[in-house]
Image (cartoon, rainbow, N blue to C red; front, side, top):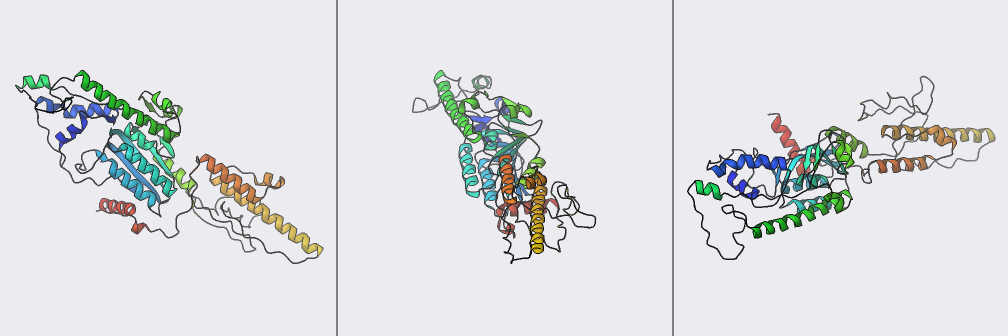
Length: 432
């Protein structure tokens, strides 16, 4: 059960990092309190934190939704509130899980309280550094104010075509209830010590001194918020301030530098899966070569079903295997001295093997979105190793310096992971 008057106490007289529209909704809900109408508490079960799911590619998707607050002890499932502590626990657990390849934050939040936000951003930074795994975010449909500070911590930030980001600002609300008190026949008397002890109370008009104090606090928090966003987005604080807490939708968010690309959660999952796909050493060609069949994430085709455009082959002959990109091929044994015909045959075999490596590399690069001309590389004398390094450099640049990472262990230990255990429990509950 949630105590709505207690929530009201966290809205008024304290700085907030929340979008104006959501703030007005909260004020409208709480307004009956000032007319003397009691607020009915909402029933519900204790909040279980942000929903987390694990994709087939071992990518953790963490939902960050609703209004954000510092603590979860007073939340319930129907409150629409989510605590920074729970968000941090979910992110840290996912990044530390050895079976998780990367993390995506699915954000739909107008922001919330100041308390706890800046600490959460530091926790996310430290967890990313320790895990060395990609952390991306999707504004789906909004990542505003405090929620944008969280989203800006991601290595890559998507926004849907109608999604909103920004509202980088701080607001504080004071409600003067003195007129309502008079109408209700109430007189409030404070007995206090300390000149500023009752500054800003809701039963008196806001004094100039109280206003100046609140404004100074808001300004100081705004400076910190702009500094955090500037550091995360690698821009200047002045550039962040220049947004004037405006909200940017879709393409406008890209132009403003507040997001990296337009895309849905599904697109983000697909692109991360491609970026973190394990890359194995290429197999050596043999006389008994058989077509390798493995499902392609993007098309659901198999390697054996997809023709290799870079290497011609006769009907009935299996197409060369499209080999992965990383790891050096095993060195070939030094051949014994040979006669002239044997040497020529060995040289032809070596050329065929070299071209096969180049063609396989080109096929693998094409699936990852990098165009490679194997025939041109052969003419220019570019080795498979040099070409492989070039492709990896292109992938690293496309993924913005941090998305190609080591593969997860071949035997996942999901059973030992709190994040996977929670996902399985949610799935089991949904099937009951």
